[in-house]
Image 1 (cartoon, protein in one colour):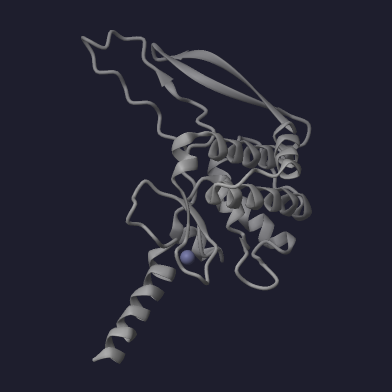
Image 2 (image 1 turned 180 degrees about the vertical axis):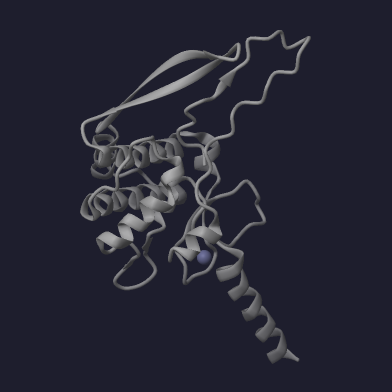
Length: 222
Ligand SMILES: [Zn+2]
């Protein structure tokens, strides 16, 4: 996850005499195992991608993994570590409205298609729900970058964070060019990978299904 590094550290020491401390790692999202334990087959990606993956588009009609408030709440709780302090779970309907826009945009980006303006407006309006000011503070002689989120409603923090995450994925060349869709024809999960060999969303679902299919094809040929 690359979202919301709230304490990236800038070293003020001379780099030639002291090794600069590494930047603070971005806050981690849920592990895939935690996501799957909460009922989501996919997880551990950028917040926007995890949100998009709550709509399974290969079924007719699409399968909504956050169709009710408890499921929506579960999604946000799972991502609590990457949300700004003080966040609260938004209404399911607002979450799904943003998710639908994010899904349309990420699908288009993954296919190299034009980004739909109505979906972009939804993301921009959602991002504007909470504003961030950035300042610098000294901690143990090291200058720290701090972000302060300003909002009217704590639920807006979660939505605005997901909107910003979407903007990151769509505008960061590395993220956008590495956005992939699972190679399984019966799966619509999106993920980011720099590994050209990775074809499946998850090794334990689609990767395994592929291994099983290949195994049976080989046996049929024997
Ligand atoms: Zn898959």
